[in-house]
Length: 320
Image: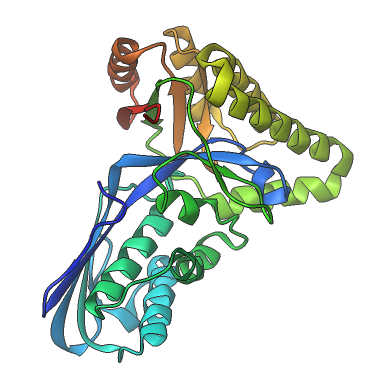
C-alpha cells in the first residue's frame, strides 16, 4: 500500500497510508531513549472524501453518522479533521468522509496515526493542495495526542516513511540502510492493548522505583543501539538475541502479559531467532524474526494454528 498515494477529482479525493511496527525501543523511547520502527505496508487505511450536502459525516466500520456526534473512540480523528479543515480554510460542511482501514486498533500497529495520515492526505487532495512532511506530522499529532496523551511521534514519522526509522526525541531522524533482508512474522494476540495506559503505568513505576526503572529503560536504549548495528552490519543472529533481551526488560516493566508471552515463547520454540511484543503491550501483537523466507511462512502458519488472531509474514528488504 503506497504511503504517498493521493488522488483527487472534482467531487472526490483519496488519501492512503500504511501502518507501522516498533522493532525495538518501546516505552524507553518516551523517556529519551532511541527506538527503531518499521513501515508495515501489508495493512493500511484509505480515506475517500466526497461532496455531500449538510453536516460533515463519517462512514467507517466503527461509526456512521454526523461527525459532531461521533463516539469518544473517534474524537482524536474528529479533532484532526476539524484542525485540518481549519488549516486548509475549508468550511466544515457538505462532506462525507469514508474511512476504510485494515489496521486493527489497539494492537500497536499505529491505527490512529494511519487513519490520521490518510484523512489529512485526502483533505489536502480535496483542497487541491500539496503538503510538506512537517505539515502532515503536525496535523496528525492532533489525533495522536488525543489517543496516547504523550506521543513520541514515532508512529506518524514511520507511517510517512519507506525505510526503517531511527527515532530519538529531540534528535534528527535517521533512516537505516540494511545489511541484508530480514524476514519477520507479526502475530496478533486478538486482545486490544491500551498504549496510553501502558505508558502511564511505566510512568508510575518511574516515580515509585526511579533507579531500577531508569536502569531498565537505559538498558532498552543500549539494546536499541546494538540492534541498529545488527541491521546495518552484524546481521540477523545478533538481532534475534537483542529482541529476546528487550522482551525480558519489557516483561520486567510489566507491559507484557501471559497471552503475549505464550505467543513469544511458542515462536522461539518453533525456531524464531528472537521474538518480543511490539507496541504498547498488554495485548496487541508480537514480532518474531525468522531464519529465512521459507521459515517465515512456516512460522506464520504454525502461529496461526496455535491460535494467533491474525498473522502477517513480511520481509524488510535491503535497499539496492
